[in-house]
Length: 91
Image (cartoon, rainbow, N blue to C red; front, side, top):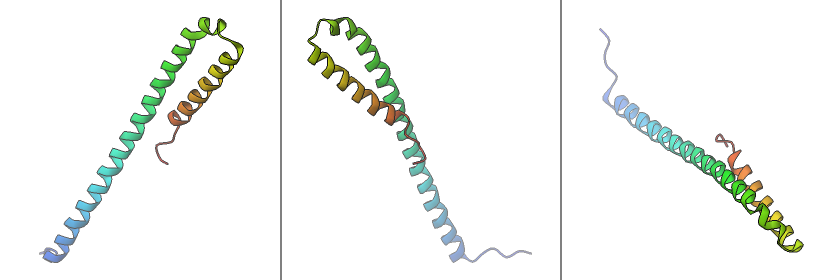
């Protein structure tokens, strides 16, 4: 007949298992939040590109300096959103 482990070992095992479950839950939540941020960044990229295509006819009537500033700001926003959307979840 197999004797059960001493109560001290069973208590310790329960504590270790509870801590491991807590860590796994936290990592799952972190991964979920990272995926959500990536999804929102992709959604923002679509919106920004759509806004730029709508603004294209209006850009022709702008001064060249304003048009250049618009292009620089648009490219900056798009590049930031692309970096966020391609951020690796494992990092």
